[in-house]
Image (cartoon, chains in turn red, blue, brown, purple):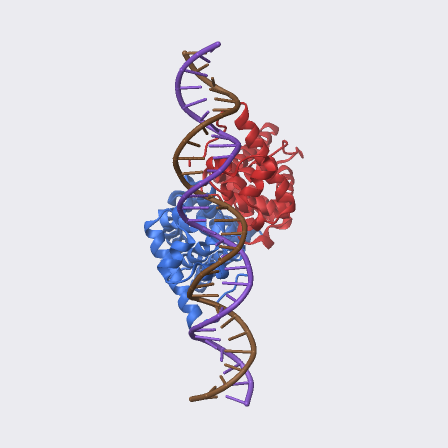
Length: 192
Length: 192
DNA sequence: GCTCATAAAGCAAATATTTTGCGTTTGTGT
DNA sequence: ACACAAACGCAAAATATTTGCTTTATGAGC
C-alpha cells in the first residue's frame, strides 16, 4: 500500500480525494477521534469503504493526510521589521494554533502516521519558513543565524515542548528561545 | 477506557500484563507492524482478546505501552569526568538506539499513542537524566546549565531531528548542540 | 485463616471492520 | 477515436472488536 501523492490528479480521483478529505474535516468537528470510522467517512463522502482502504490503507493514514494539509502555512508570515519580532509573531500564532484542541489533534494525527514522509513535509514547511524570515532579515541588513540554527534553537524546543511537555509550550519560553538563539549565534559569529 | 497503571499489581493481573507484553515483544521481532494484531498477541500470551481490549483499548495503546517501557533508561549514564563528555556519551548511545530499526519503531509507537501521558513519561526520563548529569557536574565543581536549558539545547534538537529530519540526527550535530548549549549558558551566566 | 465484595479474566454471540475478487467506469496517452 | 490501465463500486468473505454474562482469584476486614 504505497502512499501516492496526487495519483491521476485530474477527474474522478481528485474529486474522490476532495470529497473524502472534506468528509473527514466535517466529521472531525463533531466526533471524537475514537468514534471516527472509515465506513462512516465513506458514507458521508459518497464513496465505498474499499476505495478508502485501497487508497489510504487505514484510518490513521487518512487522518494524517488530512491533518498535514492543515499544517501547511496559509499566509506569509507577518513582517514586524526585525527578525526577533518576526520570530516572536510567527511563534505566538503557531503556539496558539497547536495548543488549541483541533491543533493538538492534528499534531497527534500526523505523529501517528507510520510513514515518515508526512513529518518530513511538516519539517520542510518550517525550514522554508525560517528561510523566509532569515532572508528578510539579511535584506534589511540585520544579522541572522543560519536556518538550521534557527530550527535547533527555536523550532525544536517549541515542538519538543508541544509534544512532550505541553505546559512549557508558552509565549514566555518562546521569548527565551529566540533571545538565546540570536545572541548565541551573534556571539559565536564574532568569535570566528 | 481510562489508562490505569498497575491495577491490582499482585497476582493474575500482573501475570497477564507480563505475558501480553512479552508476547508483543516476541512478535514485534518477527512481524512487521502492519500485520501485528490483537488476536494474534492474545493467542501467544494465552489470553482472550477481550482481555486486551478491555485493558488497553486497542493495539496502538498496547504497543505504546510496551515501547515506553523500552525507553526507560536501564543503567546509569557513564561518567566521563566532564559534563561535555557525559552529554556526548549519553547522546551517542541514545542516537544509536533511536536510529536502529527497533528503536525507530518504538519511538513511532509511543508517538502514535493517543494519550499524552506516555510521552510525558519519556519526558520525565530525559529530565531526570539531565538532572543527574548536571548534579554530577556541579559536584565536580564544573559549571552547568539548568536542566531546562539542557533539554532545550540538547535533548530537543536531537529529538526533533529524530522525528522530523532523521538524516540530521548525527553524532556530529550532537557535538554542536552540546557545545553551543554549554558556551551559551556560560556566556550568559557571566553577563548577569 | 476464612469470608466477602469486587476487579479482572474467560467465553461466546453479536457487531463492525477490513480485505478481496471481479466487473465497470473513466482518465490518459497514442 | 481507441486502447490501456488506474481507480472505483459492489458484495461476499475474512477478521477484528464489542458486549453481556459467567467464572476466577485478589485483597480487605474480621
